[in-house]
Amino acid sequence: MNKTIFLALIAFSFFISTSHAQEVSEETGSLNSGTISSQFDYLNKISNNFQEYKVVKKTNLDKIKSNVLDSLSVFEKDLQAVQQTVKDQQEKINQLESQVAGTQSELEEALEARDSFFFLGIPIHKNLYNTIMWTIVAGLLGAFLFFLYQFSRSHKVIKQARKNLEETVEEFEQHRKNTLDRERKLKRELVDALNGKSS
Image 1 (tube, rainbow, N blue to C red):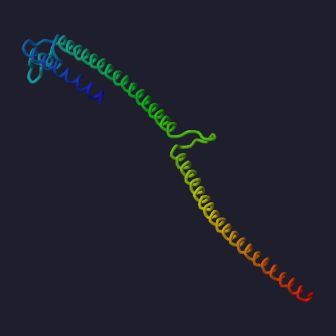
Image 2: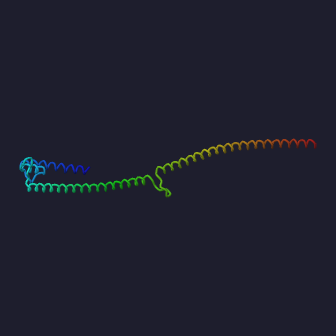
Image 3: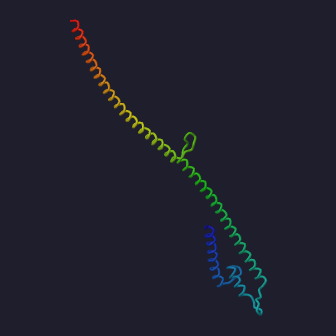
């Protein structure tokens, strides 16, 4: 795009200078100044006519040839300068593109480094790490709730077993008392029976 603008500016300035020189040469006319076109017009004007031909002086023809070659030389130099400028700008563009590519690569590496880290020598992305950590936390919470449930259930079972044991102990004590009472009663009866026989 810079090349196009630069060439357009050169063409525009050349056109302005040509039209301005043409206006000047049309008034005065000369082979020593003005544009090539105005010089050819002037040459045509000052040349003699012979039948349907124009007779041009050799000196005038040599002069206009020299002027054309000089103009071509100037244009070639301008063109070389433009080409060199375009070449320099293309090199700068290539350097900038290379720098942009390097910067983009560094940015991607920085983003990757920001979003990941090494865990036990293994590179892990932060999202994966968060997923693993939350999975472990959820697993530990599930295990805690399971053991809490098991503990509560075991506590109820133990409480019921203690209650049953206490009831069994009470029944056993009651049964023992009843048995002791029966033994005493039997011993009394036995003692009474033995006393009754001896008397």
